Amino acid sequence: MRGKEVLDLGCGDGRFALALAPLALRVEGLDPDAEAIAEARKVARRSGRRNMRFRVGAAQQLPYRDAAFDVVILSWTL
Amino acid sequence: MVHALGEIHRVLKPGGILVDARPDSRVLAFAERRTSRGFQRFGLVRMAREAVGDDLVSDRAIAHVLREGLFKSRQRGRFWHRVPFDNLADLRQYLAEHLRFAHRARWIVDLQTRRRYANDPFVIRRAVRYELLEPLSPPPS
Image (cartoon, rainbow over all chains, first blue to last red; front, side, top):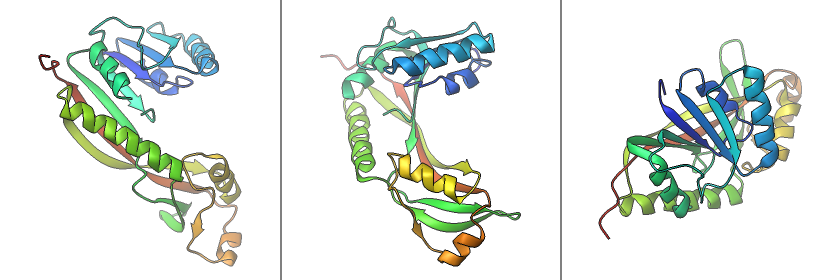
């Protein structure tokens, strides 16, 4: 994960993304649950990490450009 | 689900990796007491029927994109994951609320033993399967 651009798909409250952030160049988290994303944003703010971003969205229509990530993680998601 | 995998293919760089990790519902989970020397098995935990069905759908989606040449499998395997609990009551509460598991364990120790050690720390040990998938260029249509 070191220096990679990572998408955590189905990120929930962002705990996995938070663990990846110190290693990765950039971590994006996406989840359809707005409450979970609000919590993830709070956690990200508290951590002071500036390379994390969270969005509400669905895997069927990813709000990212083509070839944006080195790694996509489906952890407990599929 | 296949459509979502198509979207993942689109946002991955060439040579990138998709990591798919999820509980392996084909394998029983175990309720275990933590002892000073390791773990003592107290019970078996089946997966909920719905979870098994969901996993089958996921497996089919992965098989579909492999067959279609959208991804190739780089590595797959399984590891064991322990979910810790302060005591047996907490473990039972977790099972009662968790959608992936059957709501009750099948105990393999007697009631007396369960009562004697009810305040010890417990774990649920469950199998997690993972697969690393590399995106391939989509085949010419």
